[in-house]
Image 1 (spheres, rainbow, N blue to C red):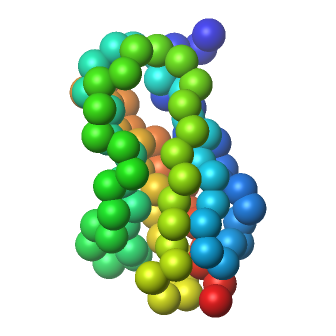
Image 2 (cartoon, helix red, strand yellow; image 1 turned 180 degrees about the vertical axis):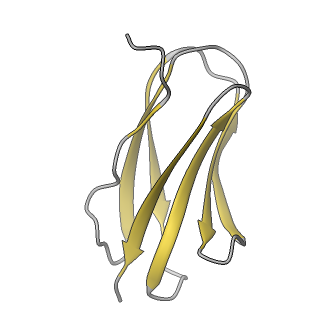
Image 3 (cartoon, rainbow, N blue to C red; image 1 turned 90 degrees about the vertical axis):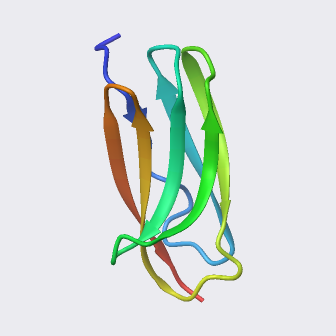
Length: 89
């Protein structure tokens, strides 16, 4: 492993109602996966836990959100990874 946090691009993207986000953790400890709009306002927290290393999957349901660009932010104690996502209604 290259000892980097992995946040895969969501799929499908763009998406209408829901999308899948895969990510890999390389260390134990608290992790948060959140989604913000482009103004930096948090719209939801998908994961707030302390799992061990490994691959995980989260489902983001944007059914109540307007069309536009959103940012997935995966944050651990040591690293942060960001991906943009597009909601199309």
